View 1 (cartoon, rainbow, N blue to C red):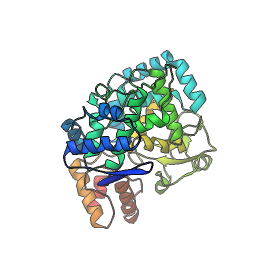
View 2: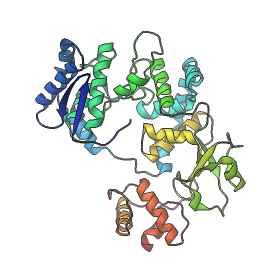
View 3: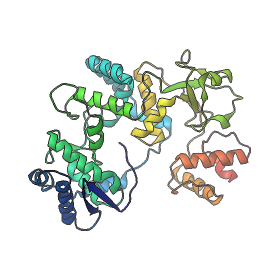
View 4: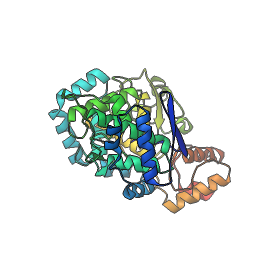
Length: 391
């Protein structure tokens, strides 16, 4: 799922004609304006009427949008919650069942089957839970809402194109609350740009066709910058005297250089010591440690939560045969109230931590590193009660 932030109105051009579709106001007026814009863009009036006439405002979509949260559990807890032996076994069974499709994805897009299996598992539990929100109603509701119209207005017109192709039914197509469709949860624009008719039936149906879903997911990852046949994440061990300030996604060095500094692959030898990589410590110097290769950055184009991204990348490793990570013994995570207090104290010292929300996001991690350095503490970006007390 990929989301963005909003402006209040969006000017939409259609050849030589243009119209101004504004968010907010009467939903009936908004629906009429969207239908007029579709006709101005060249859609047959009857097709536009068939697509828009039955759409309605969906309060359930708004409620889901307002309560959406960022993944706040620490990595080890989140990973243990999402990754079970049953999920691994079903993933490997699916890999065997659809072996020919995964072979095509790996051959054409260079994306490992473990990577796609992990997304398939986390997004829809291998297709079992694809969402029950009417897709067009959700997109229209979110386009009418004034939080992110610049994302959702184009998605409505992309859905209209899918309708014209016979790949979406405005009355019956369902998915996630934000308009993602199918087994790997792709937005309509992504389907138009990267959808693949994997089973050769003349349609791209991500809800019902495993070949369509997996081939489309692989093509989308390639379009986002996936580097063919390269690793994405590898667990490592670090020496006790390691320079903790050199960790984090901000610092990238050749893996061979990290190796010369005492970093070792936990499971055998490094896959690609010639590639650049960053050392990431999701729970500080006493917790798990990984080297993130360039493909790891592509995960953030799919989902912007660090915890989700790391868990999905690690699960892909597990599905490809990697051992369970070494959880180590990190200091306990701060409570929500303690995290908010820490953010308030960081903000009072001039750091930009964004909203005081109790979430360990990139801004908060950066501020923690700065204060750890100032206080002479190990700079590992993990919030501790010791740091909170010192501030």
